[in-house]
Image (cartoon, rainbow, N blue to C red; front, side, top):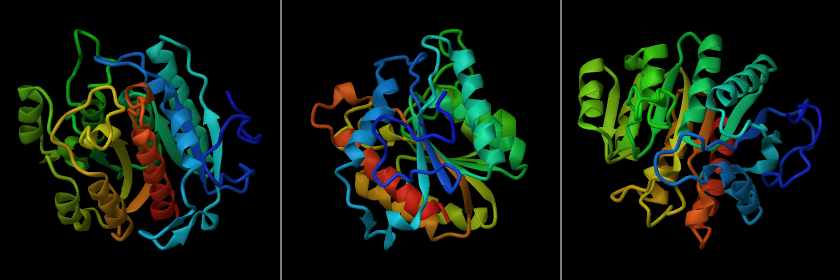
Length: 291
């Protein structure tokens, strides 16, 4: 595992600060796609997002803030053991535990969406009032997939069991089993189907003062905007709407304590527009949510 006190030797996210000790936030990669149900390859997402970030401007006209105003350290990827989901999840949780203990804002790059589950566990240990904002095409509310409870289709159901469904808020959902949508209706969790920005703006006042973790699956975007993902779903939102949502969260009274962006699978996008878009979203997340 890359040590926290030494610079990552590979490509780093644009304008990454050279010192972990002085950083406010830490970018880290989780190159895992061991449980994907359709197209693998998201383990290459973190590296390609970093590469694409080098073409970004360092100033955001959305937030009116420059990357120089945020000290963040790119720690590289956690060297997860290939094909071993449980050990990989344990390593991620241990990693995030350390970041939180040292007062850092963790910003994770996936990797499949199951990588968010150990992050939820780590944050729940520190924040007893934790709420989760989940932006995704898929409900991710299955209890198992083909008999396997460790699946990228299960992290939000696991989160509901951990922090209570009433503390989970999903947006942009347009795919899932009928049972998943029934669970959402009956459990008390919040689910906005199809759209993100408008329902999010309605919910944010209810989360004022709360500690909130935000998890974004790139497949919330329509495949026209992000074809490079493992399970693309037609009928999604635009990049513009996702940027609007990120900005809206920054303008609210919620306290974002950490975030991730997952499911970029570069092999399915020869144009590189998916990782280019992801890099921009990460820039906006840093500028919007790291105080």
